[in-house]
Amino acid sequence: MFDLRFIRENPDAFDQALARRGVDAIAQEILTLDSDHRAKSTEAQEAQARRNEASKLIGKAKSEGNEEEAQALMTEVAGLKDKLANLADEERALGGKLNGILMSLPNMVYDDVPQGADEDDNVEVRTWGAPKTFDFDAKEHFELGEALGLMDFERGAKLSGSRFVVLSKGLARLERALGQFMLDLHTSEHGYTEVLTPALVRDNALYGTGQLPKFAEDLFKTTEDHWLIPTAEVTLTNLHANEILDEADLPIRYTAHSQCFRSEAGAAGRDTRGMIRQHQFEKVEMVCFTAPEQSDDELERMVGCAEEVLKRLGIAFRTVKLCTGDIGFGARRTYDIEVWLPGQARFREISSCSVCGDFQARRMKARCRPKGEKQTKFVHTLNGSGLAVGRTLIAVIENYQQEDGTIRVPDALKPYMGGIEVIGGK
Image 1 (cartoon, rainbow, N blue to C red):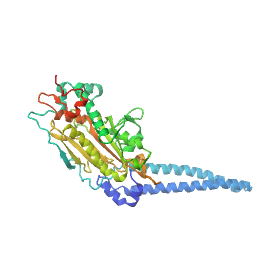
Image 2 (image 1 turned 45 degrees about the vertical axis):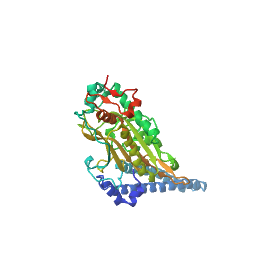
Image 3 (image 1 turned 60 degrees about the horizontal axis):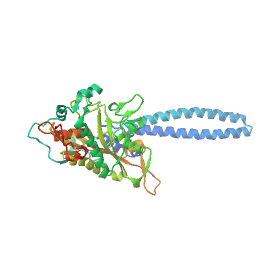
Image 4 (image 1 turned 90 degrees about the horizontal axis):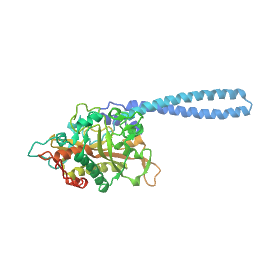
């Protein structure tokens, strides 16, 4: 969502900014609707003022015995009532059309976001660790999991269809351990507050974070008008919808371990084997509310928190800055962390950390008030995976595999595994 005042004062800059994301010039259409909407609002206010005035004059005319004038005024008031109803309908229609356009437009990216068409144009920022190699042929996670009898896609499909899996024994516990490890790290060392939120939300929550109206097909909806969350970003970010925060309390940092649900509508034919792209998965999410001048530094901090998870696990990764063709709808700048998967011999995304500026805050009406000031301002919001638990499980399986098909437990996870050091061993 955008500041209409900015568009009025900078229409060319607005169009140029959105052109970087492939959006055709739209400022003039917005300004025309805005002007018409404001004109209708002004006309309605004037009509209401005249109606109020005429209503008072009716009593005066009657008290003076001027029935003819009173009748004329009564006729005028009746006409103004109908006019106000029509103006309200017209104003509502114009406002709805204007809001619909604004809601459908992606955020303006920062100047330092690289121009590009897709993920091939993302820019590597840094790497950590050496990609793991073995003196035997590395297997993919699903080959290892199925051979151990601990990863069952057939039973997942029997229960729920494609893109579901059943984990058992050591792998089920390993996934649970990963989520606990991440939460403990973010809460005890990174300053995040753990929150447990619902997995079902109403429309307004998804409008607030930008999944609706544009990405409805990527979501699962219940028959009772609730949506299953695609990420805890939705619930965590909406915790402060329609609130005014004290700026002195910022930044506010939240983390949650949640089930996430995505229809993967645009992923037909991609990653059909294994757990890379599932309809249901677990993720530890990080969300932050900051004052505007804090948000850029907070993004760098958030990326560091996500990277630290992989460092503790001892798994190589690289961090990339997303280009204009790959960045998310609500983001102004995004870093992806890509983990090394020996079975695929490539890096795959495991976290995405974004600063959204005031884009989500305007949709949610989330503001802050500086100390001693009456005027409020919109907060900035950030979100990031810390990390995607299922993909981290894949990374651990592939990086800690052994020649006999068993999987070593990373040192960082041993306190959570009840003494299990090797999965698949005797």
